[in-house]
Image 1 (cartoon, helix red, strand yellow):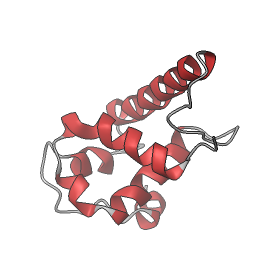
Image 2 (cartoon, one colour):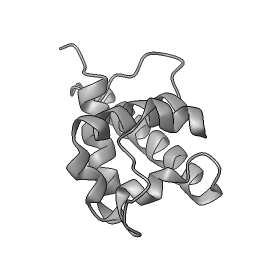
Image 3 (cartoon, helix red, strand yellow):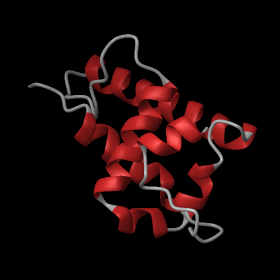
Image 4 (cartoon, helix red, strand yellow):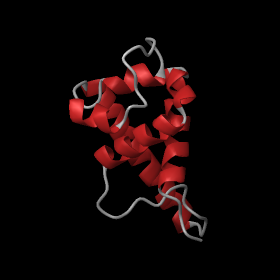
Length: 109
């Protein structure tokens, strides 16, 4: 876990309970946080599949073979660039995740 946090200093030790930053500190050791990351990854994948099948541009275009850990790394890099997002309530995590994936893995039209 120290290696991941070293790569992603967007999460700080003093993040308040109930914030995005506090929640993400527990990845990957905490099962509920790990399951949240997996669920967000799979939900975004399903949304992209739905959009592509209807001829629309997907939200994010992650390279083939990327998974939850790569998504976490991209999310943490995005939080490093936008540290104010780590202070938002954990209920905003999905919105921040989608924005981070869209910016980290943009689709070519």
